[in-house]
Amino acid sequence: MAKSKTMCSGCRDDYYNHSEKDGCWMFANAEIVTRVRVGTWEPPPYAKRPKTCLSCYSPDGYALIEINDPRAVRVK
Image (cartoon, rainbow, N blue to C red; front, top):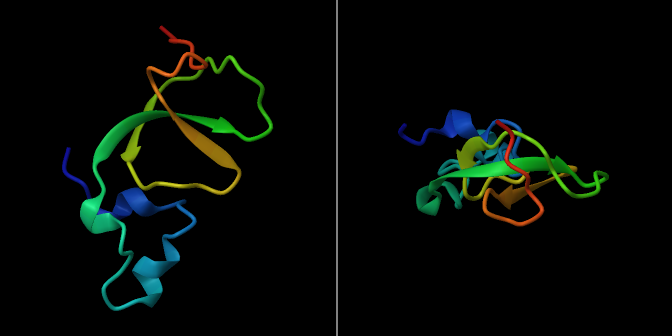
């Protein structure tokens, strides 16, 4: 899977892709990673399926944690 700016949808910094000539400055160095998306109101453990996103992706109200984080429980 190749990275694209469509992967920025929902990120708090996505507005730079629409308002700035060069787009978001973090996109150039971003890597595709697999993370678990959890709400800031949710207590651990987090039993959710991991999702593929950009390493710089930062949605409002959510935290993205590594899949090998001890708080993330593998869902089959």
